[in-house]
Image 1 (cartoon, rainbow, N blue to C red):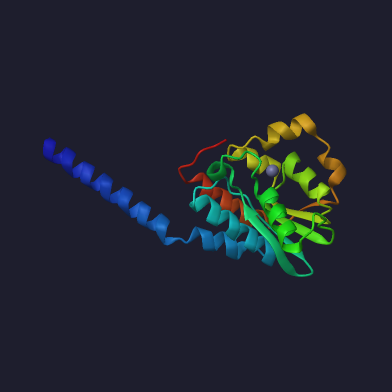
Image 2: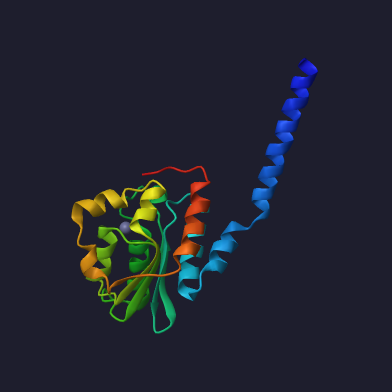
Length: 188
Ligand SMILES: [Zn+2]
């Protein structure tokens, strides 16, 4: 009986090892990046990937583009900085301000992997950013454990910014969210 149990355990271990190997064989980071059609969204996804694998925070990466050039980039750094305001969009806005030597980001477009929360949306408006492209929706953010949807219900007003907030490459960003969901992580 003990022999069978050992054999069963060995088989179970083998199966677990094989499925772990299969999971590793698929380069998920590359998959999500390659799925994005837009060059700047691809960069935003790569930012987010770097952030989650370094344990910096949630799967939120952003880049800011002006005249075809990336002038700012960043990812969520809430955990690593112990800073609840260090969302990807805010980090990228600060980076663009430094690059351009200006608080005025007129003529810039923000690309971000998740629909901005109210804090980031206001930061983009304060910065005079022309347009925001986002991958995953507020609801998607909620599905991976973040409270965006709760705050959004509280503050509302998003429907008045429909021409300012545009959806782009959601499928690729969902792959990023899936990868994050499969990792050991802290939700805040
Ligand atoms: Zn935010």
